[in-house]
Image 1: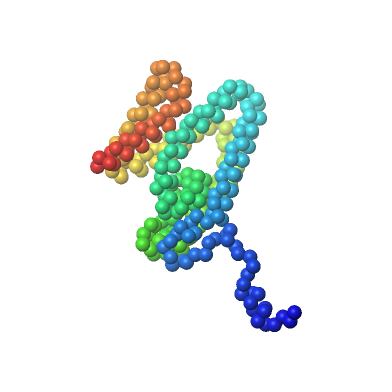
Image 2: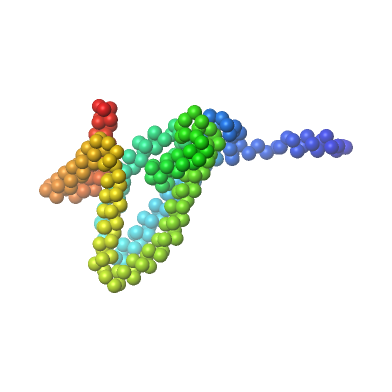
Length: 265
């Protein structure tokens, strides 16, 4: 067979491999973000992230079981700590899930699963996406929210999350060395620092919600009252399980109260 320039040109113009797994063919100026938001490649990334999370969970659980005998922690207390952690995570997880459902229309299921499921900070993720969209002269969910804006917003969220993890990876060993040094010099101070850090972080988050509206103030009071009532009942009734469920119950009550207050307004 004689090969001519026409055959060669035809060969290179008709690729035999179609990279459908990477991205669907899209138009950067199109507002149909669903053409690229639910591609198999993004689903593959989402499943990969959750696979890593599950593997980390198994590794941490095994490490805790191995370390428990060295700190004189009975198997019963270890099981109770696992149960308490699982129960306490229900309330915060519900809050994240509700917000994630609202974000599906903006980013699609795979992107929401990766970003919200991995970092969990809705304000950080939407803030990064909004900054990216504004820098391109667009608005999230607006008429000018094109495939190109979506792609840039997704990259911005991913880079933001990567910096969180990179900072943790770098700073954790440094803070661990500092913590050991401080524990040797003054164990009492080291025991107070974690509690003070938690109080400071959650107090800052709570205070930031108060000026937004009167509904926010009411919800803060409702959630605090529900948490205090659960802890009081747990102490009076000697119900240890109620302490474990207190956080989830208070968050559920606050979410329910917020729904009725917003619909009434």
